[in-house]
Image 1 (cartoon, rainbow, N blue to C red):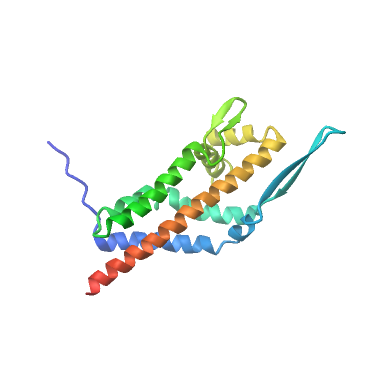
Image 2 (cartoon, rainbow, N blue to C red):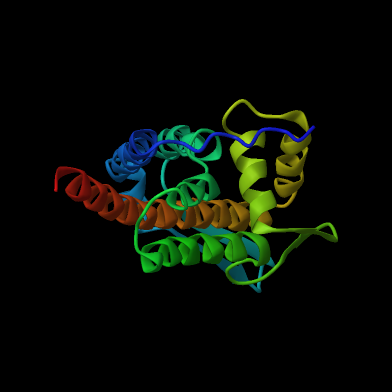
Amino acid sequence: MSKDKATPPNTDAIIKKLRLFNEKADLLRTRSYIKQAENQEVSIRFDSATEQATLREIRPDEEARESVLLTLRFFYNELKFKQIIALYDHLSIPEETKASALAWVNEFERLMTTGMWFTWKINERPFSPREIFISFMFGYHCHPQESLAANVDLFKQEPVMWALIQQEFDNLIRLHLNLIFELAKVNAQVISELEKAASS
């Protein structure tokens, strides 16, 4: 006996989901983290005379970061990017709108897999950007999981590496925010078009 196919969501349910996504995106825009991240900087100065390295770090403060991560959790649970994209397949919207959103998600996935600049290797173990983000998100913040917390302990072993990989985590947060804000624009366009169609 064949299994029944899942019932596709109706348009009202889809619009409700897209609105929730955009509400969370608007909430993220209000966070002080975004302004603080604009001035982010990590520099290393090496003194050849003393053979000591001096770190200079300008990063968003922990309270601002925690506030953003609390909202970002929604995009790993109820509002996953690929699930939002899949909703478009149930709507009568232009193909170029779907393609635009899919392109943003695909580029995000590429960067989370291969990295923005280089491959991280710590104690000869490679870490993808996704592994770094998940390790910090769910191994250091947000109810730490033991297996992921072990990765963070590994990151902490060398002070310079710890500073640089924390900066990478902030860069990855900003990568998430960029995608969320772009998808929110598409969602707003989709909602507007659906509402116009319903009222005509």
